[in-house]
Length: 147
Image (cartoon, rainbow, N blue to C red; front, side, top):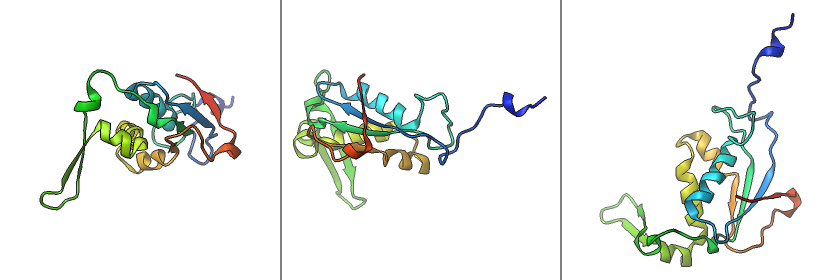
């Protein structure tokens, strides 16, 4: 009797089948859409999920400038960056971030939901965020996905 047929197959990053998805962020709540994007990037939406390998799919996010927050977060949420120099703390309110760099709102939210390791840094590279409704990844034939 062949015992190999009863074992769970562990998928490596080289053997993983990767798809491309397009997510429209228009009128979507930031935290809710970002958790779904993080799931896809990690590969948790597949039955072949392997925690120690990068088996996730590619995600293209469009209309990042039309994302929304709940409550009073536009005026109260503060993004902090520190330059490692004395007095190098920079604070930006979410309203200003939307005007200057709308892509960074989604990028930072998803990055915080991924592992803080080499694996997480590899996963975040598979996400592409665009402020408008156009993207240059038409050749990959991405599938539209709704949440």
